[in-house]
Amino acid sequence: MKRQTKSILQELNSFSTKKDIELVIESRALNVITGAINILEMVRENFDEETALDLERRLLNSIRGADPDKFRRGIRKISENKRSGTRLSLLDDK
Image (cartoon, rainbow, N blue to C red):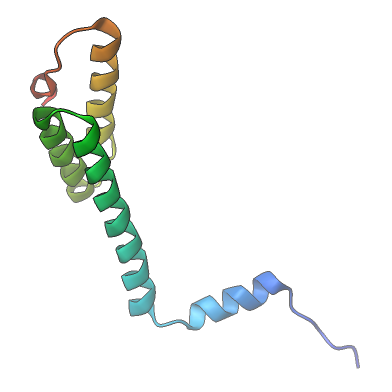
């Protein structure tokens, strides 16, 4: 009788489906939270206080509302203002 072998990907997939879902969620959440903290630190280091607070608010609202465009609009507005040399006012984009 011919022995059937599984590919490495099949083995990994079967292993991951056996994991406890709570552990998977916890691990992914910790990765996302750590990433968000790193982003907030970068924002605070690279922007003035008013801009950093607005971007922080946009990031949290993007997550809460499941709409990444809220944060993207803030970043684009900063880029546009840098190119045009105007004073940043993210409050106009609300």
